[in-house]
Image 1 (cartoon, rainbow, N blue to C red):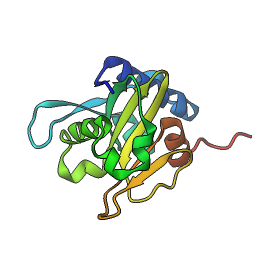
Image 2: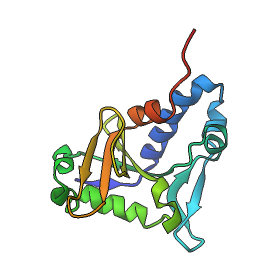
Image 3: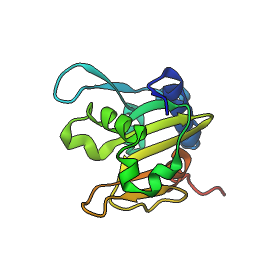
Image 4: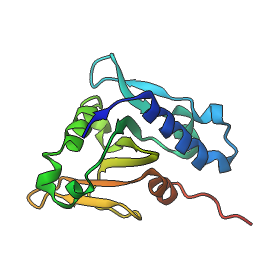
Length: 162
């Protein structure tokens, strides 16, 4: 699997968030206001993206690491031992290394894959819809992978229409 950090992945993430939060009356320009965080404990810019406007407006405090993948083996999510040996886990860990320890619970890797956008993140349980969860049976370490649309619909539901 080839994984790269790319402008296309970042643009896809912007577009998904714009589409999802448009119902709230936010402008596209406002939603796209984001900041590259600083790397770990240093002050170097990192590839981690934080959406300032959405954090204030709707509480979306996630730290995103947008990447593009050319293919994805979802079977890696069925077995923890396979998952931690996969290129996907390696790239997830690389992105996570840019995040300060106290913010790791907010870290999400967003993967752009041939027109779809997925999130991979650490989670004790998976309580969303349409995703996968892999858990280390010997520790508390666990990960979830789901389409970003499902994540946003579950955690930031659109208001009911009249």
